[in-house]
Image 1 (cartoon, rainbow, N blue to C red):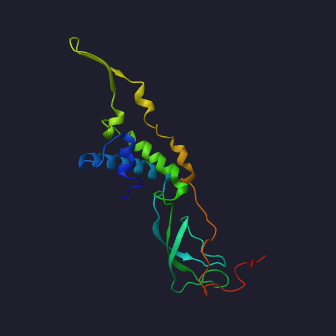
Image 2 (image 1 turned 45 degrees about the horizontal axis):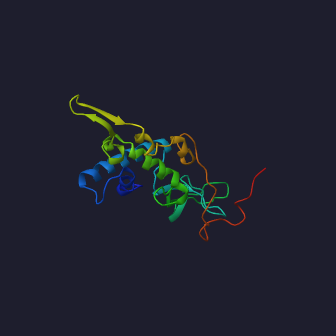
Length: 199
């Protein structure tokens, strides 16, 4: 799995010293992966652009109408064999393209990275992180008792934001439509038929 935030990014917030020990790095990456799995399940979409292929796509005067958004680039468009759909015999195509959000580097997806970092910081496998350690306020050797200062613990670590913060990118349970965003390759449309309507 490709990590959206780095182990070093989370480690810095938890007070781990660098370079990271292999065992610490493994636990950090486990925490990030679990946070990413939860976020992907909530959003119903990958966190990085992916390649898709759609058949039966018609080319319009302004571009392709494709199901996955946002479209990053169209890789190819191949005419479907023996396809002449529509009243005017407009051909259809199989379009291969790359689409999706880029939660790793797009400035607009910063709230997703914030949620991932904060959630990973609170993962149980990182309970022994330096910043999460309870601080001893007093100790008695004879009575063998220890008192901890709990006032410094919660405020030093960012509480994970509500998942609702990420709802802007959520797709599950609804269809998404994006108007054509790519110019139609030359010669793929029948001039004058795209806006024709029969009454």
